[in-house]
Image (cartoon, rainbow, N blue to C red; front, side, top):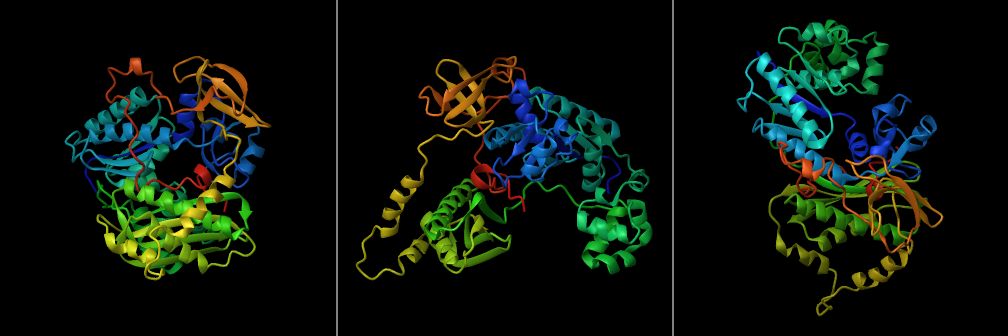
Length: 480
């Protein structure tokens, strides 16, 4: 525990939804929900306007639509979110070499290590300046917590939301925490919270009064000891600049259960290729291939195979994932598939490709038969009609940049506006209109006005191994 509140926690406010509101002038001040738009999609982020209707993250999208029928429901645009996150992280790294990102929109910063703050006054000044710089660079707001430990800094940023700053002065921690609900503490989820409630413990103060022995008896040694220390405001964890990725994975949730074995195998191979792309982007290779299958009844099976050495070869990973699929019963249907690689390393073992040829007799042709037959299957399943997800960026040859409001029955509706323009006109086109094309996201701050900003707009960095899987075709997860 530090004698000064020099650990900073930044949490961007309703990040995905706020980025969409900043990019789309017609949605500012209105309820915006970002997430999977299919029948099994879930809410990734809801704007504060949508939260007034009871919509929150991880809620099934169908329930969100019932609670907020007039909200704007948008497909996630991770290219934009990563680009904005890169700008925010660049601002944080200008403050200190010790920045610990937790996600695209959240990070700890050790201000003392950067030499920018040593007491309460200087820490508050840094926090206020950071909030102003983030708004100038991205047009978005972030909440800042300052304290002498990581746990308390995170609690402070949560209390400061939205668009605020809270500092916890050393010596006041226990008095501040005592009346707060036990769910305030990291690691206390719904199940643990309910278990404590049944025991008559609802606040952090009551948690501290219960004592370590009682909490160990109720929750087990590891969890009980950790919660007791947090209730006493004790946390000596350091800010860690680099987190080694333990695994890289991708998964898809399907709108309709898959029953056809050939289609399931094709999807597994497609996921393996996506996983390799993410693996290579992070500069890693891996030894253990993992297959995840969630069946029609929500039962989830996980199978893994460890290779002789690390690889990032797509053929090897596809082959291993296919072998794992052979051992899984998919009768009844599959609602989710995932492929991952663990046991990561910074090098590859080139001769692993020989594993894909091990089953072939001597003199077998160099080109395997399977890839040749797979291409026509993929082409046959490719829809003729172009897909226009709600919220995605487009550009029209005559009307310029805009975004998709909706599509169906062969038509797509587009609102033509830019982040720095007034709310724009809505026009409808045929889905195969040759003058309408998908486009890259526009910056949230007008480029001509960005010359004096602390960090200029820059090209998004490649997806890292720590980036969460988006779910089916970009969906953030499964309703389960």
